[in-house]
Length: 418
Ligand SMILES: Cc1ncc(COP(=O)(O)O)c(C=O)c1O
Image 1 (spheres, rainbow, N blue to C red):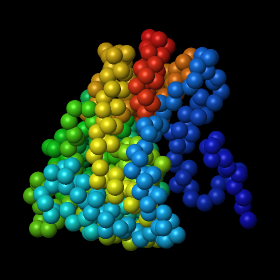
Image 2 (image 1 turned 45 degrees about the horizontal axis):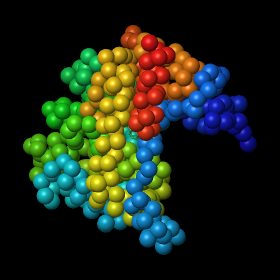
Image 3 (image 1 turned 30 degrees about the vertical axis):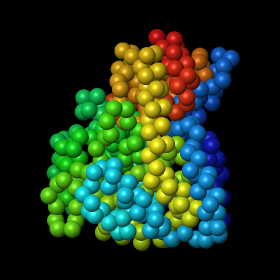
């Protein structure tokens, strides 16, 4: 028997290469890299550390969760069905219809919605669903923005596809330039991950942009996965969604969502990252196949969590409170940072994407001199041959703490980075 010696916290250190060598194509996860970067540094300042790295809202979760979990505790001893409950699917479907102004009855929740124990696992598993052995006679490509949410790359690589990193810089409006995609690439594209509002830059795709992406997916026969995890964290106007745009496009009879899947989560909307609750919605043919795949490899969402999630998708009051809290935090950040580091007010999400020269050096200095922990932008992006890494000059700052803490952290950023 071959024994692997590895430590989850310090990154995988294998005494012998065993198993799936595709894993070696991946770097350590961004937060493992950050832990390694900052481990040798002891913050000089005698102050409590301020953690602005993980996108984990520190707001008090809504009381609905506790109440519903208690009321549905009898469900803990049951294996939940992969498709969840009709009540959950209806709540998610009704929310999508309300939020995106979908024509009544267009979205059939029972065939177009699946619950997910957090969207991360499903965004990852999606590649197993979408990537064939070959596409157009070649290795399939999985497209993703650059920078990107790390599981997209992990999914592409582990499914045997080539991850293709599409620069999303200030020059391209912080979203991939769809006009730059060549037919040669699109023909072998199996899956395209889009994130809107984008993590980390907060850019939101326009209806025209989403219409173009949906059109390409249909023309070239790939899955368009739109990660709308930050859809409910917005400052001025609700970002449009991909289903909303798809509903307005000409489509084959009865197939408004062809090739399209959207992912929604309660982690940010309801400050409930620990609940592990989200859903995927869209093309019933893909949802059906996803359901089959998930029957083999997923833990269904426990019945009490389905009940709590149902109640959360039906409630907007706590979401409005949440948005008000983020508005106050962005106002505080803007007051401290406005005019520096390319600060801008994002369309959505709760990240600052600050241009600081060298993101890794800035992260080290902020930790050493101010006990402020942020993520170097380069840990969220990759270099394409001959091009600079689009994240190198940036840090990502997650506004997940309370307003005073955010203001204090931003003041430290200015004091330390100048
Ligand atoms: C862009 C993006 N998508 C998806 C997720 C996953 O969220 P969850 O698994 O909590 O639903 C995150 C979490 O940080 C994210 O930033």
